[in-house]
Length: 117
Image 1 (cartoon, helix red, strand yellow):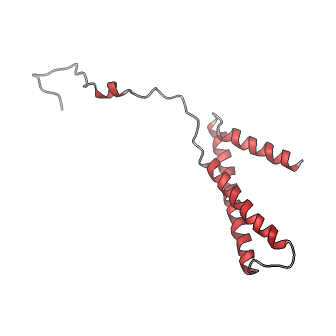
Image 2 (tube, one colour):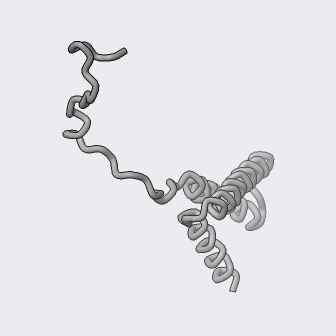
């Protein structure tokens, strides 16, 4: 059940990031940016706990800390890329072709053969 909820939330975040609505896109970027920072903070915290315990323990606790460091790093990477995801194209005029850029400008007003300043 938890995996389904996390999947739905991740799907909503991705939908928000590619949405045409600018407000929804900004809110989704703020949320994914916050999740990136939280994941990075969790990774740094768990790494500090591992360092303090010299990466050894008598039980499975250190294994969970090592898995947590990798998982938090993965989520920081994932949410970081989602935050920096490019926006969908907006309604913009088509780009100029090379032939249009190379064409000399047309002057409608000629004064004594000299271009106006």
